[in-house]
Length: 460
RNA sequence: GCCCCCAUCGUCUAGAGGCCUAGGACACGGCCCUUUCAAGGCCGAGACAGGGAUUCGAAUUCCCUUGGGGGCACCA
Image: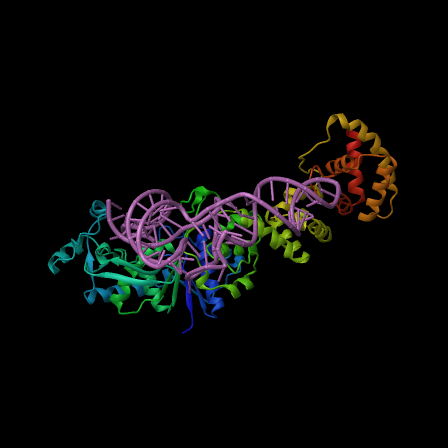
């Protein structure tokens, strides 16, 4: 039987790190097994579901490179759930519940007391006039519910800890546990790969399978992703949505690689592309302990994937990124941009670093993290006026020429080359750290370089 | 309170009874290279939560303790 898996986000927020990893594992498994990957939007909570979040989630999935073969939206399937619930009701496997929110509130934490189970038809008719009932599944208190989890092995729950839970709310919409099962049956899902926080939902869902007379699929509960404090990853841990990392300039390849590495290992290989991950992926490689979200490795992977990109592609990504940041005017000269990217490629770890580390390539208003100490200014200025003349005469402005000329100048004047070159760097870029000074000068161009040196001379 | 899951370096992990003096990667420290910073090369520090039991032999099996996490809604 061919593999069918689904990723079922609810559109109540942006795509979260943990959710994205669940999507990725499902997707990798489907692609590896040549199966089907289904995207199902779980928007039965009419209050909290927002179209914009659905769009945002889809956008982020695409960005990650995750595509789907089938698409469903639960809000389009409401009558199916209702129909099935009615059927269970008719078969006596479920019953109506007229309890109010307030009444239920008092029962909090101790389970439902089955107050509505014994209601007579007459009583129900009376209550029906006041309000609409919800439908609860009848779950026997005897025995236990066992199932095999692919990662954790056999799991067992005593039935008396499973409530007669609501499957259809009084407004006619299904609850999560119910719609999930109905859909997973209809969509012929073979493996349910989802977060470990769903383990405790599983016995409930199995009760539904049982009531419907259907054999449950394979369950694969992947461990949680935790924050630095080991609590479930949430907003207070900082950036937790995929979109935020995209905005920070991480490559989608790095993000995917990082997500895949959390909670699994691939023969000690670390830097992997989507294709390689598909090749190497298997459910056996998933670990059972939770992972702490630590972005140090993400930084490393991002750097590695940037290095591996070819320059044309990387330049295009940088260009798009700059445009997203409203820096369109930095991208107009595509050849220049290409050159800048090419000398910065090996030293940036995110696309944003182009802005942070390379602003001096694009604007005269570049940030300065270093200045020439005032006591050196005078001396440096005297030397510089000489050098300016020499550089101005250069007809070929390239790295090797610049290096030759400047180095011989340093020798002639017996200057401290370390000091002098670093001073030049600071004047030209405002930074202590840049690519090779001569390359930087070449890319910057003769005019821009000389102007900066002259301007500094004038000021000093 | 009840139910469930998890437990190897700071972090992600390898390890399915002897191959483990516990391997890799990130991060960290040192050295080399070097006009700066990365990158690269070499070296280093760093872990089986604790206690029992089984066994000739346990990181690996079992039990307990402890610690951490998750769940107990007409949310998903």
